[in-house]
Length: 428
Length: 93
Image (cartoon, rainbow over all chains, first blue to last red; front, side):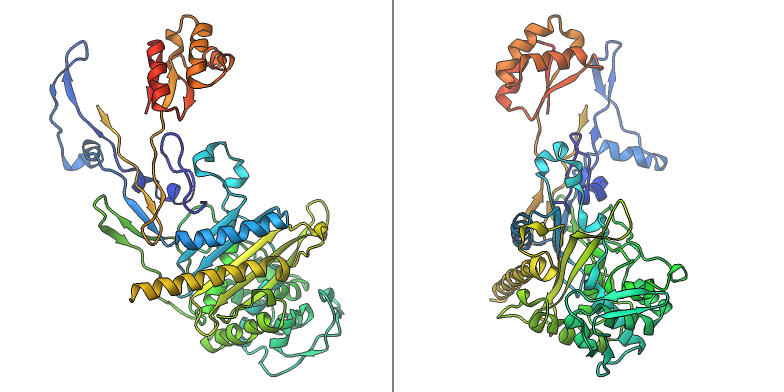
């Protein structure tokens, strides 16, 4: 598992928690010192002299085994998530895939899967590419999945309201300084903000970006955590790319609202949606729950950050989650994540991958993503599934709604059923 | 004498073990003590299940005359049998 990491032959942590907490996990060795004769034969034990100045040496005299580390990961949920993701990853012959399950109120990470992965016992002989925790390291253009966040920023700033209709130019919007913008499938006329999100209109979002203006859009996205590390307690996190507002062109303010000209990591995305699901309150994802000594006593309890502020107003966050994003699942592109027992909220994203050798985007390579959570009225989990380069030639589809949303739906269903049973047992 | 500490375990939120340390036995050869690399390799081949040619190459091409790893993750029986062949063969836990 990438979150745990692995160790080298000489027992040093090489990745994940094994690396981050290597010193604590390693403990410290001890040495017996002897006076020896000229042939190096021990005569008698040498006394250990300790003085305050020798603090560092004293620990060499006492054997201290490594501490235990308790993670927020639940092995059962981790297994659900991996099983569901690997099926789709193989079924669509994808290049890579990630899934992450987070408790939005605390930021506790319940599962973290990055494929292709590796056998920890064979880590040293694995393809180095597979050792990478793509949830933290890989940046991608998020595409439409970012729309609910921009909508929340715009609503919060008063740039739009819930009842007005925005003309979506029947699918063809162009102008000086921002080029031409089209829709993914078909054009639209007048749409409300909710309809823009349910139909995933690019033109609607571009117009919202123009109304909001670059400074407010930039500040809002920074508050949601883009362009900087999410601050998770394992190494290797990338910053993502959100250029400062003064470097934006006319294209930026119309493209960023539908997820182009910005790159994000999976951990940043899931964090931003945890903030939204947490009624706008800041959340930071974390992996280490507690540290225990050799007697099993907790020596350090890692508590989630106390809530320090709101990114958007609670009523704005609540509306986006429990109305607009519920609409995406009940009436829009996220229908395959719909569950009988739980009301799911979500947003699909199908982002073109930029060509590596020339300008523009590839017509065959996509990142299919789905962010979701449930129950919508009081979210207890947020799940992100992102599948890179599903094979379009298979003819089975390649969009976030087709490839990623069924996986997220199944992970949510299994997780909530499991947590419900666990909770019921705990209170029996 | 050096006492090595046991590495700590990593547990999930319900106390289930996600990562724990296992002992790995390594069969090593001390090249400077080897008089006939070819015959030593032939003797080690059936015990360790590694080709004699491969073992011979490791011994002859080792840059460290004091130690060359021949097999990582050897079974206890393999270690005992290998050790009995020559004083040039050692085992590290």
